[in-house]
Length: 402
Image (cartoon, rainbow, N blue to C red; front, side, top):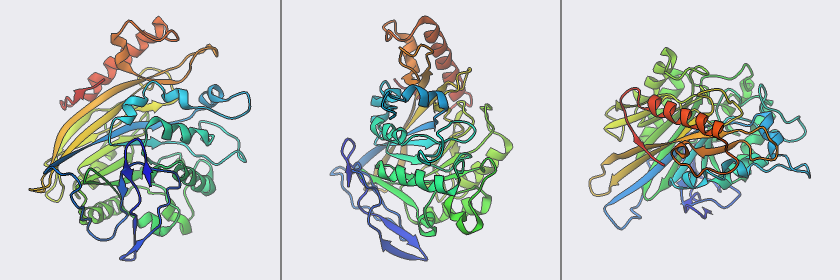
């Protein structure tokens, strides 16, 4: 099955279960792109599909995808349905550019039987995930402090809707076998393993019998699963954490510990979400069993879309990481790291466009859309400068992209 605009093949899927490789019919019900997810228990051996000896892949990462009540109100149509597509219309080209675009889905979709609502218990219309897919996302992580906002039933329905929309995912699961699967995506002959964990929830957890539904981070489980994923021989291993303290940009001592749970066991890329503000990006020396000589940690990608509108919470970024693989030598290298600062335009006049993610680099142009006024431009430029300073605070200096 292919998602047409990026040609990522999700048709070859294997599950890890009790040490047995089982062929499993793809659960992605819509047409997907040209990435192959291999959920495997044996080492992944990828045949060279690139005629050249070198291939590259760009992974894109975006922060928190949220849906507060005002966003729903703005997206509601006269017939009672919802249209969230305008939210992503100005950033769609940037989301569609990476070979694999990954976001942090921080909400549930329990359906209309439960009231729709935002904080503190997020229940969003199904049209939200349709817009996420339409905008260029390919894969979402779903383990976060709001995963259980609508209970086990809501968690399961959210996962169902994500799959029906044609997105890959990890972090929440529908069975023990599903939980024990390692998601490995393949594009351009390069394989990417993705793991996802949350520091916890807002108090509600799956029952003891259903503990498999949600990945909650601890040193034992993260360490063992990273090592198991590493043993499957992916080219790159990514760990995405929901961690940290809200509105605090720099890492805490707990985050540092969680970082080591992943890095010390072979992770190449460690990506963070949850603080709702952009944090620093840094490089780290990887362990011997990792693929890259130098790994990347992005402590927080900030809010990609939300109704939070005070300074720093209205900003986010798209992190683009380009990996090169030499098929002759087997060496994998970090080719390029870049970022696109983003900003959420939020208007109060219902006749105007509202809750629109835009490239914050728009602050450098005078030809802005008519729905953006001078005050909005000032705030956008403030966010642009804030993001640039924070991203490079630890000296990493990834490329500023537009």
